[in-house]
Length: 319
Image (cartoon, rainbow, N blue to C red; front, top):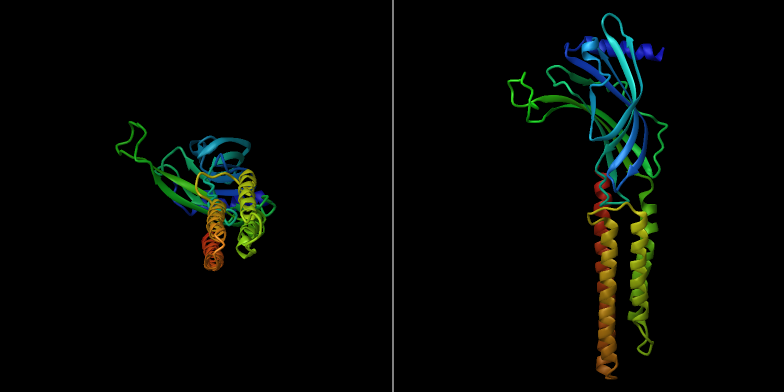
């Protein structure tokens, strides 16, 4: 019954259009194997259309753009009345995509399935079947929320006729259908604090020597330990977070923290030298420098982190 309804809708859609126009619909049933380093993802989806006979059979003519490996698991073609046929096929594909990790964990992603026929737009022009297309509500992608689906058609000009002697034009235009699935991270703030809490605590500990008494032994011990803690946390984050050649939000926070702790060490070395003179005026100056450094480094650190996080989070909200 469901198949008959689909066929009827598609047949009406095709009959109302020009002879070269063919409805094309996509229904995504699975998203899996997200490879952030390899810039790929895998998907299973149903594809259907209505065509007018063997001359326009879509069995082996549709190409998945940026496909690294695909297979047709199911193919069927049934009469849709007259000389029209309703085709459907289920496809598994590994597709290239661009995973932008610079704002992790406030990042989002648009996964696109791009489809073209090997015949140009003069022979085949697709009409997106937006009424029946979509994404399965049963899809559960670990760490991601599915927030949207869209289906659109564009004309793509490759700027060449691929050596086809039958063509007088120097370029060929093809009809391309794009099915786009929009994703956002699940609970990004929880992930963010898990990966940065150690860094923030280390920075606070490194500031404590500014408030220690002059006779306190080795005020450099705390910032030195904090320095190693930040470096260690950076290695832990790098092993858990998808790699990226670009400078990410977490990279910036770790780098900023290391720089601030190094400044703390530099100030402590300077004021310890002033206190070693046992001059009262130098001692008072060392206390003033410590307090000013603590306030300045804290304010700069908080302001810089607020700017980095707001930019990453704000960009994700405007997507």
